[in-house]
Amino acid sequence: MRAMLEIQDLHVKYDGIRALRGISLNVEQHRIVTLLGANGAGKSTTVRAVSGMVSVASGRIVFEGRGINGMAPHVIQRLGLVHVPEGRKIFANLTVRENLLMGAYNNTDKKNVARTMGRVFSTFPIIEARANQLGGTLSGGEQQMLAIGRALMSKPKLLMMDEPSLGLAPLVVTEVLRVIQEIREEGITVLLIEQNANAALKIADYALLLETGRIVLEGTGEELLANPKVKQAYLGENVSEESQPES
Image (tube, helix red, strand yellow):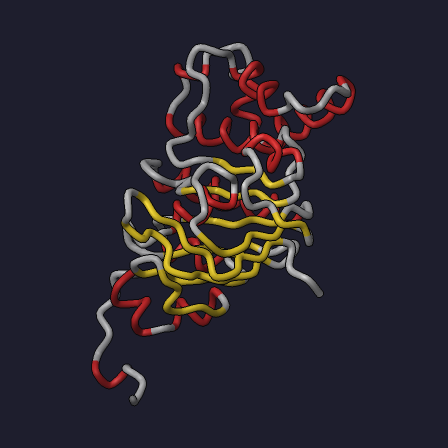
């Protein structure tokens, strides 16, 4: 079975600096796939390349069997590949409802838009209660929920989420991660970048570790949770020599 998203030998350069050095990965349908790594490892560059926000030096990106290299971001979004950027990027001077409608700008079926908004409000009751408030007056957690809700208004097939828990209180992080699982259960595939490696791996079907633009480790979420290197470098656990695998 062909993967929903295929990245093949992808290279990206910024001002002559190689940000991605030939990464290849597949995202299977109806799965949560997470990218791990330190700042500067290439995680955000990967999803920005997929969504058409940065140029690709070489390699191929295929979505549902169709090459999307060079397509404009709004065209890629119409295909069902939707990006929730780091930092939320909501419209502070628009109301919650207006922000959500911006996510549905490609949909001319008013009844369908209304139904989708109803589902978003059922997923995030707190933003329904804030529907007429300006986006800029919401808390950080509420803004993140709004950003996810706006993306869901686009009726995504694959949702790419860049650091959705960044700067949020632990209880809000738990809620956001619960919603990500719920999104997957509704049939939407998720490609997740998440600074909270422990939480991300617990909900991930598959995970990949990036270092300096290369994939250095991959496996199921459970496998990476149990990996000594991941435990020590990304989960903050001390790993004794006795627990290290023999070379």
